Image (cartoon, rainbow, N blue to C red; front, top):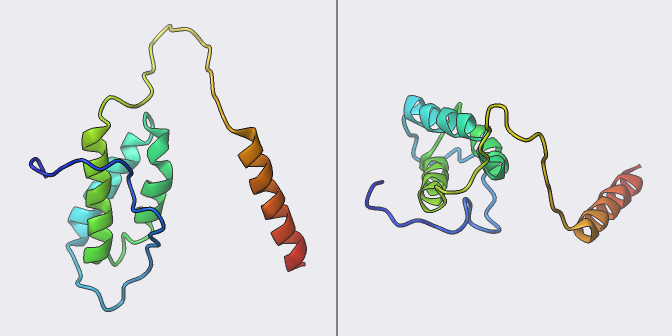
Length: 119
């Protein structure tokens, strides 16, 4: 992994991980160690939360496909080592967050419409 190139996103856009019943099984212990380390990292890297929760679903029966996804996350971290939140003892209690409220509103409308359609 030291000689691997970094990637710009932690997961391939549009990629959907799923159970891979016929896939090549990999070492569960090694996979669990990688996922556990990534879970620990989410305390200072909230941008990693989605992808870590995604790959953690397959800790019981990981295959080569799931291991490749976990390794891609490590390659992403290699290129973004300067990102994250730094918690300072006795620091300023201010927190600034920015969001695109238009996208949130569209997303909320779609979710409400889906729920209303379901019932």
